[in-house]
Length: 484
Image (cartoon, rainbow, N blue to C red; front, top):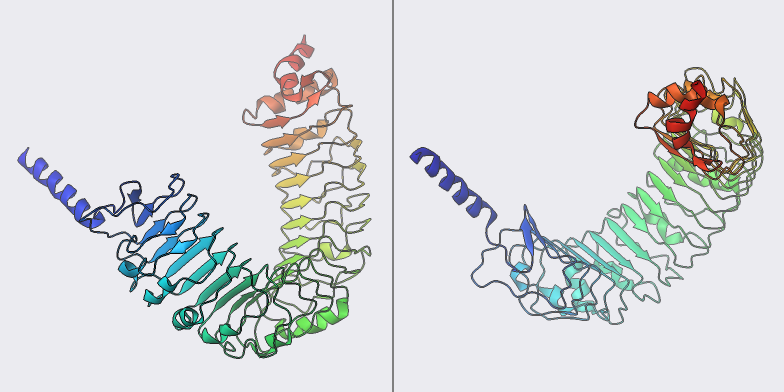
């Protein structure tokens, strides 16, 4: 008994020494975190006198805190998230207790109007995020101070009216995000102090009409996001860099050949290419981009199914909301493609030759497919999810799904089906079946042959109605009466 008690006391003592005291009574401390979020706090909770903090992360988001008083932060913190607090005032000594340890600070949806002097006590700050805050006074002395150590800077929707020249005081930045601000014109020298350090750059919703020439000096950029601007031509990409991710969605790019030419210096490195919501008329000739895995070309104006070439490594292709009347020829050539999104076009049929065998996800909703034949899907198909809703689908042959033994999810909602397809009996792995919004669908004893298939799948989720009854109830109760 003595041994057990002694061991128990030792354990409790070890836990106590390891975890330390929670510095705020209003919060919960666990592992390395002080959790104060969603507590309805309208002010910073007082530090518990004599508490010894060993926690590193303060999460105090989603409260109503308006000010951060002097020395209201415990010692030894490395990260604080003040997201979604209407903070308008930060006392000069607010962060002093953690001045030598704090590395990451985040403010979102605040009422801050200036970069606070409190940042002057921070000697190891490497990441600063301020979003949706009406900053007016940029406090250049403070910016110069934190610029010496900062590696990641995010300033989104903070009232910038021009390019911030003080970025020159941040020579070690690896990640920079300046979005939802008026930044044009961006000077040609904007990144001269970041030529080799900057790796990830985001300038979204900044009213850009062209890719800034200033980018050409960047030699180590791997990710560039210029989405939601008004860029018409792709030029001035940093040819010395080895871009891995390029996001140009929600622009006005229309010149496919020029786009291809500008991407050529990144042929061996580019892995993710996002060109959704542009004005492209054809699939670009991108077969020389040998590392591309994910391509988004949805919401363009592409109609020619014979256009373009894509590299064989592509695993995810987005072609939704274009003007295709047939599945593009390039799809069948992608022998590693696993996900194809081609909804919201005018595709009239799915042919055996259209789909690569290894495809596991097909979204072809809202097209013009009317029938599925016995030879629609290739033998040994790897399809796991098949979305066919919102097609004028009226006929599914009895063996249409014979090659889809691994299918897990099938949607046939909002079609012209009048009977539950007997082809379902070949779907040995189905877990979700959507037959909703088919007003002409009826269930009769003709479909009773599916009862054994249904009963063998007790976890099958069936959506939809036939007549006055749910399809699920038909298989569970009504169809069994057909045997009498």
